[in-house]
Image (tube, rainbow, N blue to C red; front, top):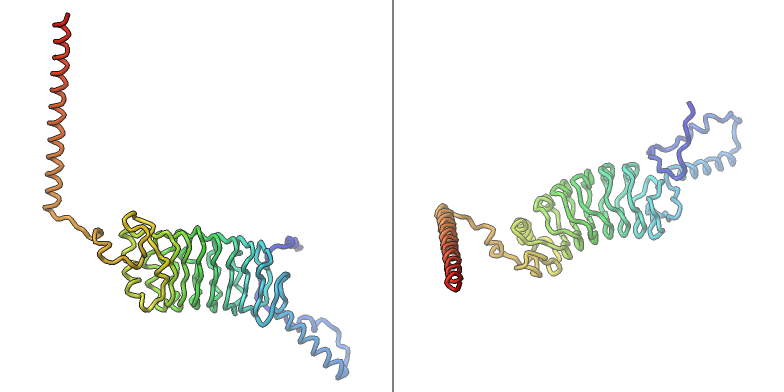
Length: 318
């Protein structure tokens, strides 16, 4: 059955299979014993073809050298469809890429570094890093990411450095966003739109050494106390940009450095009312309501008396 050709420019899923030279040579007629020189040249050409087919062809507008593919600053609106299979370092920085297709990294098992900074990414497809088990450095800074879902880094357990800084619309990090990243040492969440960060999102990172969270509009209410308490206990082991992290609210702590808040700052969060307190509040409410009724009654009598007196005065004058 004939199949329709794929549209020009469409991204085709890679098969991750290398061509077999035997499939080509087996179809050729036997020419007889070759001359040694011809055999040598044929072998050299064949080896060159095999190296090319093994995945060293370079995408248009990119440069490739020593397993490094550099496609940065090329005004790309989409990712290049074909990369060398043995790519270790891929730079797509400083472009206009708005989306990464699902399964884009499936064939690149050797990928160690992925640079996607300064693009227009709003989100990443689920399972993008399922086969990128050797990925160690990921840069997603200067994009338009709005949230970090639970499955964003699924199976990418080798990550050591993640940069999510300068995503101004980043307002939510799922509590399980970094689950399983036991080797993560550097995490940059600075200069986003975060007002709150769950303690659960960080406490599962035993190897964390550097944490950048400054430049966010933190709301330092009672919900932030567990995270700040954890950070204070880790501050000697984990370098943080403590001078840049400030509270934007509530008004009583606006402008205060995040790490300057102590347990005393959250004392009001732990106030509990006893039975006597509730009885006192109920009694005060009862007294206030009775006083309100009496006051309204007296005001009504006074108004009625004034009305009668005014009417009597008018009759006397007549």
